[in-house]
Amino acid sequence: MKPGIHPAYGPVVFRDKAAGHAFLTRSTLRGERTVEWEDGRTYPVVDVEISSASHPFYTGTARVLDTAGRVERFERRYGRREER
Image (cartoon, rainbow, N blue to C red; front, side, top):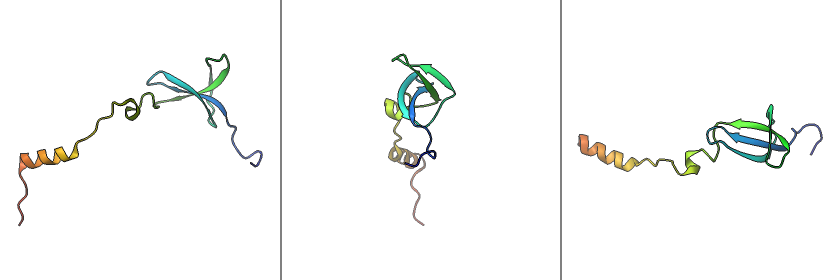
């Protein structure tokens, strides 16, 4: 890689505000605040609104919409349109 044109890549703690979950990973993002991690070292922290710990798709609380049932219910309620 060319020196001087790439952002610094290093360890960062991402903290999910909604779930109270945090994980250490590597990123080019740099938080303004720092946090002491489980290993005793201090890392920059980036607060995120949602992560895999709080997202409905990953937690299994996502709702599946039954579009076919909705159409059938509509047709039962208002009847089928007749061909002209």
